[in-house]
Image (cartoon, helix red, strand yellow):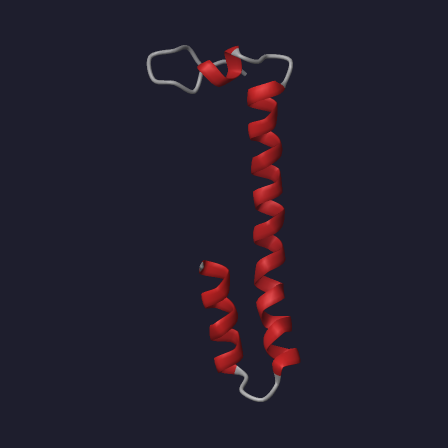
Length: 67
């Protein structure tokens, strides 16, 4: 929903020029996509990496944190 709202704002800001609106929208979308990919890679390592399941358990309150 957030992305749809942002696209709508970009289209409203550039009426009649969809190419410019899409360009503006994509410039904000791609950095967020890269951040999400980095978070996903980190989470995958926590769940399935060499330290699993201890790295995942370390996130739970009351358990020691591991690197």
